[in-house]
Length: 596
Image 1 (spheres, rainbow, N blue to C red):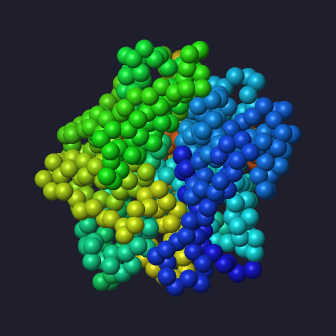
Image 2: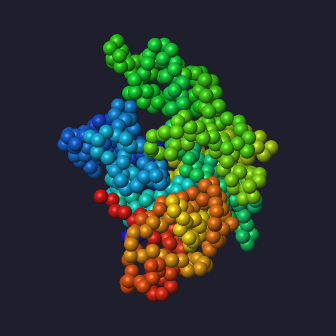
């Protein structure tokens, strides 16, 4: 069956969106948004433009009640979407949130049943991969319900991932997508690139009049839970302009949710001063109320104040509410000072440590100031260690930047760094919440129409750890060298031999294989060896523990091999070890453990 639609799925940290374009469409400027049926309260369904990326896990006896039934799913004791988000106030221990960020967290096994994190033993748990699969299954069911004559598995699907996702996080996302029922030929696209494609779809051929050779475009994407930074350059090839992704930032766990929480802390002190000490249930409710207040006070034609109400819980307040006003200027001052403060280009995100002991969990940023994270990103991309890359243009994305005030503040800070304000690339419609999905759908369409494409390749260079030879010293491990096996920008669907001396591969017994990545070392080539490096240069990704089998038992303890690297069409990294003595080859993959 021929493809009927190009579908873009924004699998967001806090909200997921589906956009689509008919395959025979001649006008790609208006990708449509699929309404997603979901529960908003027990037994109450609504169709919304997005699916809240939250999972509520009920008790076992709830499965037969029909409370969480949908047209395509009966007798469940869990719910995905808006109901789960709202239940965070009532039963936070039963709510899974941030599953997408857990996929990128190397400190845990993403196949283990660990979510909701630190929930009581009586709460059933799921893995980050399973939670992701459940979100995607809901989106697939919503599509198939709305488009019964065009099953999603028969369409061309583009699924977005953060630019900061490394090879293992991409592999885990792909695994969850295939398990959910997405087509095997789906494409993974970086979210900031999707935001650029949404702008390109909106502009048509006009984009060439707004960007020129040498333009440096900063894509600043601040959503509910994360911040994603990408730098895109404009070059010329045979007289034609083309776009190239030059750099990506780290996966920063700071965003609109932090801002809502900051406002909630501010309001909690006002409640306390009035003699209303909020319990944990009310505090979560206050957090959600502050989200709505933020959007109102920082939106168009805002009021001078917004009333924040919380349901009463005391004996004299049951059934009633307690309310206080959050003033517009009060909210603006708090958010600008905390999240968009003026700073120097040489400033770096601070590491605030309240104690030498910390709870395990997601590696949330201790620095909330987004302007400092942007300063660090631009400085890290200079390559020489001096100065910083100056963006000539900026494209904002994510729900936080619906606020013109916050967009303006970010531009003002950049202008003070470089004595020139970057030009904002705006779209004809205010769709920052759905732009990534729309851009993904447009990307699928553009692949078949020969429209403008962003060149990129891998967003990181990759290295494998090689244990050096030498005399044994008690209590000391031999030094580890890092061999570059994938250069920055290696194109998808390509492979290459790694020029290096033969390496001894441990076979026939358990062994650990260590991998590293870098988003800043763009000069390294396959075969280059780093004998010393800093944590800012290389970051360790997932190490693998595996036993590689051999066809014949070798006479020597190590099997001499050479490396071949491959980057798949999905942008995932494979390392092949090719025997120098036989025809045998071994592929090292990031996902080696099966989910149980």
